[in-house]
Structures are given as structure tokens and as C-alpha cells.
Length: 75
Image 1 (cartoon, one colour):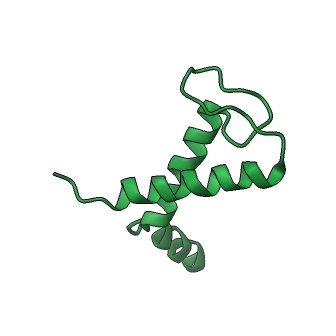
Image 2 (cartoon, helix red, strand yellow):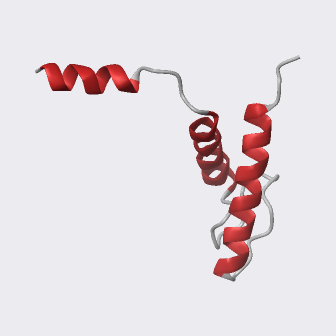
């Protein structure tokens, strides 16, 4: 039982900015269908590309923007 307590305690610590940015990326990608072959239905998604390399490039660019947004100082 003690081991389970330590694991739960470790999950309650502060989250890294990379983890928060990844969650933000997942939300945006799922909402706008970025990186999929289907076009976004929300009106602000990018046009879908057929090549897997282009989809990966889109996702990596989006992840970089998410990290920038998460790491920017609050004004």
C-alpha cells in the first residue's frame, strides 16, 4: 500500500511546461483536426495535407507554438 501512495503523491506535483503544452496540442489538434486527413469543421483549422511528413511538420509547429504560449510570462 505504501508504494501506491508514493506513486499517487508523485502525480500531484507541479506539471512541466512541456506536459502542459502537449495537452494543449492534443486539445487543439482534436478540435481543429490538425494533422488528420479530414478538414477542420470549426472554421479556423488549417487545410489538411495528404502527406504524412506535412502532417508531422504541422504538428511540430503547433507544439512549438503551444510551448511558446505556455512558457510566456503572464502580464
